Image 1 (cartoon, rainbow, N blue to C red):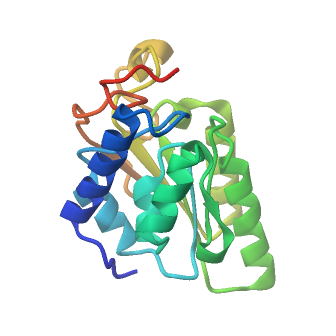
Image 2: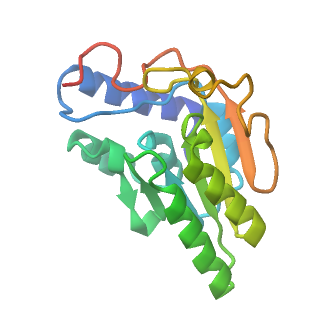
Image 3: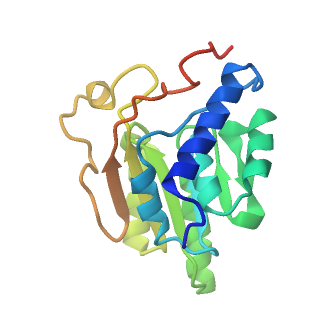
Length: 204
């Protein structure tokens, strides 16, 4: 999918949302991206308009790259819907529930396979989510059933309170370094914003 947005435009959008949040114009949680622009643009080079994209509460970039108009997206974020942005007409679903979209992504992929359709599912998740039982079961099921799905694991080392590797007692994450037909793993440094919020105004 050829992006109509540049790296600079993605960054500018998040900066605008951060500014709105700091002015108390947003009365709900936000989760901002920073530092992964090149990675996510590369992923979207393989995503077509008719493909489904499912992601977590951090989904502003995915929505923009899937074609959701900037003003519509911004208005929905201002209305407090940042962690649950869903646009059926653009085939993008996000959820504020940890692992919430993963089984949904599997179901969509299974439906595509049964209908012998040509589109595909792309499911984004964070590093902590990737170590959950739900993620492991769904990924293994999809590989075994050869479903038309690809999982993208974004490692920003920003679990809510504890580092992922420390939480699970791992030196290396299960899918760390993966690059295959079913999994893309990438790690990026995100020092501009905290796990949630913009780092200036307290959320609640």
